[in-house]
Length: 456
View (cartoon, rainbow, N blue to C red):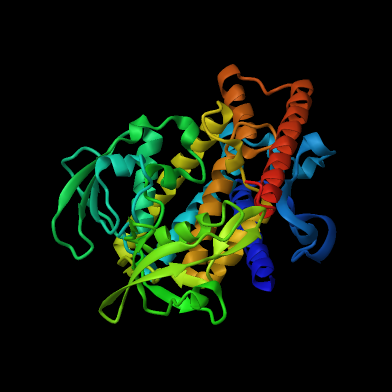
């Protein structure tokens, strides 16, 4: 809990400081007088003003944002001697540059964070896949449990190496959102018997873009060897005669090729509400045995499931993914661009109803992911921070009046018509923007609570 809280506060602090520093730095470069640089809102907890009459730097009690307050005649009387430093007196291009600098700073930060994560390197699951769900796209394409995806292609001619399962999922998601098919070059998990598969992702409707996308496509899990790990003493598995190291060959006559298949079979055994004996075929010390295994019936999160107190399936094989200096930076730029485009596409699909609004997340989900990534290691946390930084940069460019993108729309209007938006319309647009933002925040918080309570 402490790690989650600290990681969340660090995430907010870094992103807010960088965003507001972008506004501040460009404003100063354009000769705008900055009155206050604030991290957070509400009661001031810390204040510093290096020079009398200069910028006041403050940290406030509510760390869910920040702001840079600039000298502006629209917000109060400005002395004649200070008119040259008023924001509203600056040329249009300078005002637009100051506003755009915040989101730009977040996108530049994302590039730096991705690059650092690439240089440090991470351990990710090897792109050896568990058996695809029946009738899924991968299943129809001929994917089998234990297939190792070696490369991908969008046109069937130019092929790109697949570094890990994470890399594969990213490329497949990109292709799906473009409405394109993707070709995969796969082999057996030992690297023999290469063959080519065609995933017809164009057949997916936009409404299927959600958190379970990979399961629908058939690329949900990494393959894990169906060998029992820990067998808890006194549990239903131990009572049925199971031992660590047992290789599961079949359950109730169905061949088991992957640890996830065994876990799903165990869980499904409790759906009738009673303990149902299962016929297991296992291999132990080179000998094949038939066992009657009876899971205990339990209710977890409102669902009836079977439980054996064993862990079927060894951890998936991991591969070290890291880049050189130039490749890491180049990949970081590409990844930031792709993530920005993905964010815009997802927002667009949510607006027109082609993607579920459940994809919208708020501070609770961000805090949870921040804590999880921090526990995994520095590179994972930097990658998470980069994703949130991209999201913050893109969201701030949306043409909503209370966001930076809304102000840029005002300046576009001014550039086209030669006159500024009237105070009356500014007030109306601001009110509408606040209402939209409150609705988005409420929906994001609702989604957070629903995920927390297991309702999504």
